[in-house]
Length: 119
Image 1: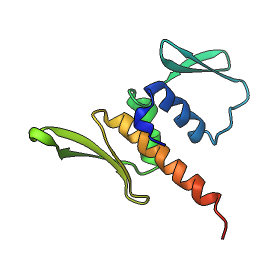
Image 2: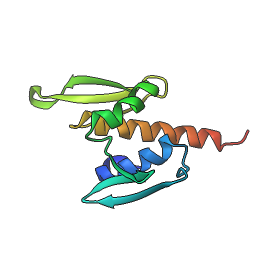
Image 3: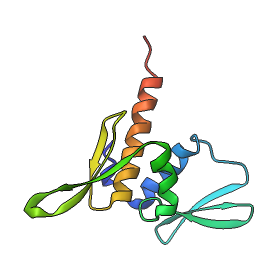
């Protein structure tokens, strides 16, 4: 899947479910409001925006050993390059947190394919 074509909200939804083992938790309600993914747990609404909020992204980046590097791009511009060395999944993008979440989703997709293969 080409995650780069998804909106930040769509990426946030996918990241949330992968990060939480694809299972909505008890007493948790999800909704989209003003383009943001929100979840309610114990009557408290909280935004989850890992593409733009370092507090939402950092735990995922650290736990999954996702690297954010800066590479020189066209016309001497610098662009974030995000990768996971173990899986060799990588992504260039102008937003390093969004690129990190795309790499996270690529890692989960790859792990899911490997888990479902026989032989």
